[in-house]
Amino acid sequence: MGEPVHALVQGLILGVLTGGVYALMASGQTLVFGIMKVVNLAQGALVILGAYLSYQLFVSFGIDPFLAIPVTTAVMFALGVGVHLAFLRPLRREDRAELSLLVTFAVALLIEGVIGVVWSTTRRSINTSYANDSWTVAGYQITVVRFAAFALSAGALGLLILVLHRTRFGRAVRATVQNPESARLLGVRAERVAALGFGLGAATAAAAGSVYGLLYPFNAGSHYDLISLLLSIVVLGGLGSIGGAIAGAMIVSVSSAVVATTVSPSWAPMTFFVLLLAVLLVRPQGLFGRPA
Amino acid sequence: MTWTGVLKGGVFVLTLAVLPLLGLPHWVLNMLIFVLMFAALASAWNLVGGLTGYPSLGHAAFFGIGAYAFALLLHGQTELTDGWQPFAWLPAIGVGTALIGVPIAAIAMRTRADVFAIVTITLLFVVQTLAFNLHGLTGGAQGLSFPVAPFPADTFERPFYYVLLGLLVLAMLLTFGTLSSKIGLALATVRGDEDKARGLGIPVGSAKVLAFAVSVGLTAMVGAVWAYYQVGIIYPQFAVDPLITIAMVLMVFLGGRGTLWGPVLGAFVLESGQQYLAYELGPSQFYLIAYAMIFLLIMLVLPRGVLPSIAGRLR
Picture 1 (cartoon, rainbow over the protein chains, first blue to last red):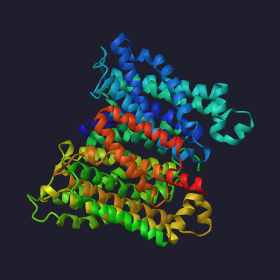
Picture 2 (picture 1 turned 30 degrees about the vertical axis):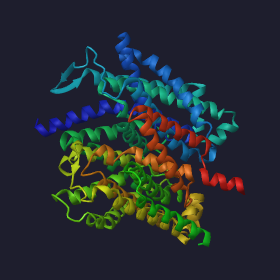
Picture 3 (picture 1 turned 45 degrees about the vertical axis):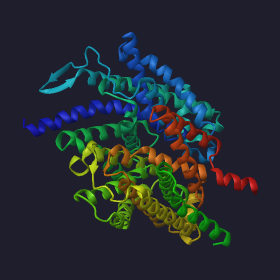
Picture 4 (picture 1 turned 90 degrees about the vertical axis):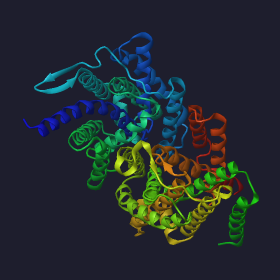
């Protein structure tokens, strides 16, 4: 096989594996939008906070980041509910959509500031014993961490979809996403669903954060790298659609990995912006979104 | 325009024009330059974010584009004989950036306000990453150097001060002109109920794209003056800084969206407050926390801004 084809396939593999992690992060963000029409700009900051929490558990107690996930998700779920009650619930309904953008951006800055104070701004990474292990399959390199990250993200996404389709809470969430007014008339307690939904979004950020910390070094400002990526994914897939978020994550991740391996890593961030504009031009509601 | 309005504007501009001649210390003039800079930026943001209700979170990208355009225009030269001459580039930088803004606005404003916010914030981070990555053009993290302005040290701040004052007056005149014209009415309908306005045959599409283009053009010109004031070198993390976007938005929200004086008031209050915080807390992360807390407080307590709240009280 020729060298360019090999690079392309390697890029594809990397893109799919990383895409799973992005899908998990983005699913929480698109869920929050679906429930209360809030674009949560703090999702990236919550992911980074999740990475720091599992970093601390690993450094202080030697807990493996994968095993720490139940703890970090529980903590971040509570934090998410708290953020909703403190900052989003008080906003008046009529300007919630616009103000929530700014409020969640402020929450992101607040989290960034707190991380900076607690952990300073130097870059951290989680160095497990298996951090550098990799398998070679048919000439292609697959690192153990990346594969495990993909498997875990897929599992967490499956769990999320199960919660949404098999529980009373999930039914209330889906009803709210489809039609908030009718859901309210049918006895769905909108504010409670919103608070729990925001908590669930933060919990997915925590799970994804543990994995992110294993894959990349991070510091307080790392959430800036995630904001544009996650937003492109959710708009691409269609705001509010979990299936769309998964598809969007795969498209963005695979195409930027391919651009990075075949053209140049410098232009990879431009890939998803161009994709975003192209999709908005053809289909403003995103691939899987319903028209507003 | 009412006579009191003209009087108020005249007194405001005259007072600001006289200030640098009073022998104020350099640190005060430096602070005033940043206050004027943010007043101009906030007024520019208000043209689109306040008047149309489309919250752009990407204006810092256009600030950076203006800054880099200016630095690149001067990059090849070894020294400047006439310090005023580079200011002549400002109109070209403004118009050029406005033209870049047109297709972006045309695509991003086809959808809802929240998708617009998402596209613009994505643009911001993409431009920032490109400023870091395109070493050949921007010098990457090492920064981009250009000759220092050859103004005498005693009055070094003056040219920047007056050019920024000029840009602020321009932004305010444009705001006033828009508010009292048909375009202003069209924009008000966009903010109110865009679909209904379109149904009535109001050219909402071109009105909001025009507002965006003018707004980012002004922003880029301010970015160019900022670059010139940076004594010979600019770095990507300061030229394309999310905090600049946030400051613009916050000032408009504090003062009052869609008003002529709100953004100016917001900038005077917040920028002097910010300079004080930066001085007291240093460049530490506590500064970021304080800033975020003030931000949240304004959003929760005064979502309509100071001026509209006072007006509502008086009515």
